[in-house]
Length: 360
Image (cartoon, rainbow, N blue to C red):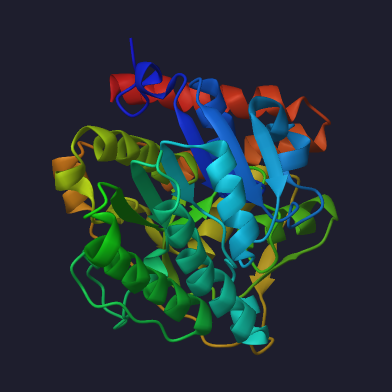
């Protein structure tokens, strides 16, 4: 029996081109696609951290080909896509940190905006492509610091360069869809997820990997912006939405080539301090956290997504509470800390998630 969100009969043998496959989300998606039988060619920079999920879980073993390349290199990107001859393209490569966008805004815009342009130009020149999914961010919206969630038809914006660049990537996608791709028979959708947590994230300036580094180093976790409210979700939640949406893009392109939110339910929209409390409790070993009083650049105080559209039109629903999401995350890092086989462990978490979607 198939999961409600993963259809192996659809994915088996399907040719997929995935940018950003060496990153946190990209590595999880590569493993999931490989498990479903897809033929995946990845294109990305080398893993952005050490350690990395890509290396620790031997992600390259489930891929047809893994190419280290820069999406800012338009000619190399186009050549690689054409050689891969995919039916589905999933674009996840990005400069994904708000903090780094303040340090190097030009590179952030080059990667997130012009990288998207390069990808879509390559798609136009690859006749096998039928569907494209561009992963942007919940931060693409013009944030008015309100308590209600943002729906897909609201204005793009962004206070910081990262958020702005993701709003720009949405506008680029819309323009290419309307001007070129729709006429050429290529379905293009965009997807916006919340604040994603899960095993294998080692990025700077993110609370979960910051916590793991602190806890394993016997140090107190320093928490920035503890009162900020974020839409927390396990990495498998939005990835399940991406897989489902890609299937609909192939089967009913005219109805689903648009923007989609894949965020958590309201009860998982919690403060940073609440997440820190659960992390401390889940890890045990008398670990602690405290507020980081150092000055940092502006970040939004509150952010939520309205996912009514995905729930009603795709029958997609998140299933894990924040407590469960963090439990699975802590289990992953403890397994890693104990030198477990992380390929097997990560695939087991995917299988657990699939089974629980069946009974949801």
